[in-house]
Every structure is written in structure tokens, then in C-alpha cells.
Length: 225
Ligand code: DC
Image 1 (cartoon, rainbow, N blue to C red):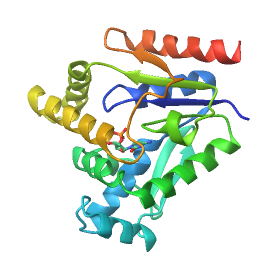
Image 2: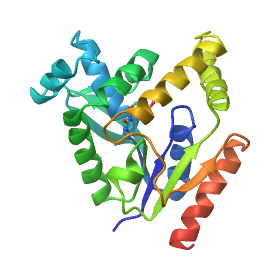
Image 3: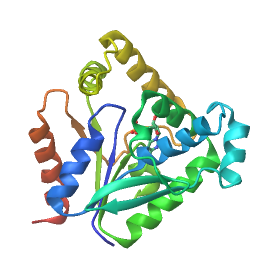
């Protein structure tokens, strides 16, 4: 079995940037599975469908109107929707909450989980998401639940938004973080939860580098040097 690292955690825990850096240092590819759900969310918005309309979303997927693919260019993930590179378009708040809605539906999850498992079966990879340790790769050798307090996550999220010129106030970002947590942890299908055998990494009081080191130490413990 190729080297596989599974990382789950709530929104804003820094999963994407941390995962990117850990994968880079280990010389393996990083699959940001949230990007795939965001692409399906974006597909509904582009098609003028309400992402909370289960029937319409499932119909779109079944008719092949939300084909998600992932490619790598110089190690960086490129997310494609129906052949179009949507890596930039999926990074809006709107696409994020559409993703959270569509990720509740069985056909969406089935389609994406299958693709993620196929990719991880063929090459060493680090996958991050909400259900990687519990559903996608339950037998991964390294399983991590990366989290931080809601306030710390909202603060980091707000700083990211500021960099893009988005001045959304802290209270609103915190409300959004709490709403996403509630939706992701209470959905009926594969809700976000820490797998019993996953290591907990709480980055609330850790720097970026300390968080990277904590994860690399866990990888080393499992695979040796
Ligand atoms: O990590 P993110 O914010 O890009 O994820 C967007 C949404 O996709 C998130 O609200 C929940 C969903 N998601 C999921 O259900 N399962 C995953 N493995 C990854 C993301």
C-alpha cells in the first residue's frame, strides 16, 4: 500500500495549507477533497440550482452535469469542473457554503469518495477533508484530526479574507464558522467526527511550523525515518 496520510478537521483549521506543506516536505501529492465538493457546489450555482434542493442537485450529478476531476501541475492541485479549471472560482464563501449543502447528498459523496479512493490507491498521497479517516481511507497508516478553537479558526479565516480585500467583520466570520461546523457535524451522512484511532492535533496555540512538525513526527512514528 502506498504511503497514505489522512487528515480530517473542521473549516478553518488550516488543513489545506498545512497539508500542502507536509506533502511538499514528504515529496508526495496532496489531494484537497474539499475542493472537489466545492466544484460540485459551484456546478449547482452555475446551473442556477439551489444547492439545498436535493432532488435538483442529484439530478444534475446523475446527468453528468457536475464532472469533477483533479490534475497536478508541478505538484499543485488543479480542480476541474466539466473540463474547466475552476481552482480559483471555488474559493468564494458562496462556493464553500454550496459545497457544505451538496456534501449531504448520497450520490455526490459516492461519486467523489470513489474518485478519491482510486487516486490514493495508485500513488503516495496525503488527503485532507472531513471523512478521510472515517470513510475514504479507514485503513490509512497515519490518521490525524486537525482542529483549533472556533475563535482561532475565525481569526485565521478573517486574515485570509482581508488579504483578498474582503473586510467581513470577525463576528460574521465566526458565525459562518459555527454554522459550517454545525452543518458538517450534524449531517446524517458521514458527519465530521474524529475517528477513534486518529491522532488529535489542536493547533489553537501552535505556530504553523509547530503544527507541521507535530504531523511530521506522527508520520515518522508510523513509518519510521
Ligand atoms: O474544506 P472545505 O471548506 O474546502 O470544504 C467544503 C465543504 O465540503 C465542507 O463544508 C464540507 C464538505 N466536505 C466534505 O463533506 N467531505 C470532505 N471530505 C471534504 C469537504
